Image (tube, rainbow, N blue to C red; front, side, top):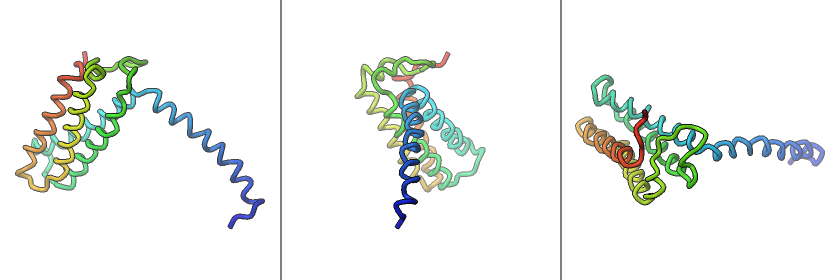
Length: 153
């Protein structure tokens, strides 16, 4: 047990630590455009690694596939909450179409389909099943992009 004289400095420092963390939490919530772009870049990085396996630039390894597919699922899970009302425009360029907010149910459905396809891919242990599972994930991503992301110019 900590004596009361030793506990006092700790009790004084604790509120200061809380104050130091709050600006970072607020900053992350203040810029959903940047945060969602970071998550989508993470999806893209993992897809590059998975596509390298499909193109035979890297050997099939179920553990590597699982790692990257789970990373995609995690990025998508985080990204789905980064499209709040009012984040259609902001301080930086966004490629999100207005349809995300006008057809939220459609957007959420497509995000969920991509998330599920990533989880299904994570469970692939057989190289013969890999191309079809990767293709399913790719088509769900493409379908969402076609409907809800404008092309980068």
